[in-house]
Image 1 (spheres, rainbow, N blue to C red):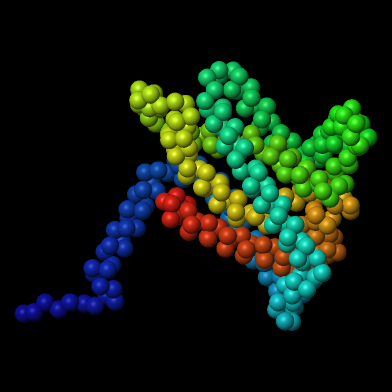
Image 2: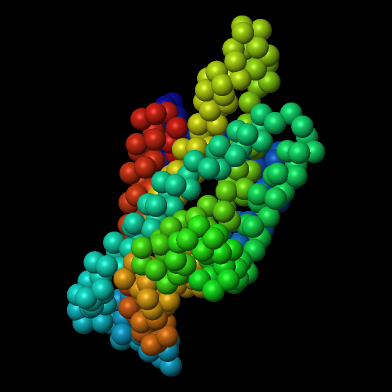
Length: 323
């Protein structure tokens, strides 16, 4: 007699690999359960504070009423009303230009100092001196911009500031750096580099510590100088970290630093310092126009996502993409 086969709805050849892959996945998770447990708090943080609040983006498409809540607020008519309001604003081009220019200045002038500092610290053979310099350089990272504002005033104030005292000694009239449209962006970029250079160098130092030391020993035996070892071993060894930081910073090109600018700027420098975030804070949040604020935030997120995807695709051509 012929044996009858029962159709289960899923071919056996397709079903078994799926089951086997799920079992292998569970085995890998169980074998590394300690690592997954350590990662669990970070995963929960991102789910609670990053992914769940995403549903609030619908405010950008609604006439949001705080008393009615997100779900019961009526939809905007047309749905792009607040995007159009932002685009039609007389400040749109100025805000976008200021945001991009300040971000590009920070990227252009602030990207390489941490790398240079990390190289200098990595090549330093006096351990106590290296530790002291590293501590002094990343200490400003822990200072809030409120404290940084006081420090900058002590240096840049036209009445008694250290730099203006030096200028007076040289016969140059005092400059109000904090209220000058010509100097304010330089103050922003310089203070950003000062605060973040030491902290950024830690990333590159960590990448340098993973380079195989036998490569340096072989290079010394071959007679390579210190500069040649840096150019042909150290820099290629941290290329992935450099590309990673660059891609992440490009994704935040529309985040020019709200806290810093909000603390440092004033009405005299609005034409060169007012950015998307500060305008949204004044017009969107202080005036309770949450729909407009959400629309601008959504606009920034889309632009940032596009830039990250483009930068990653470009980096993949060099063999250094994130994914």
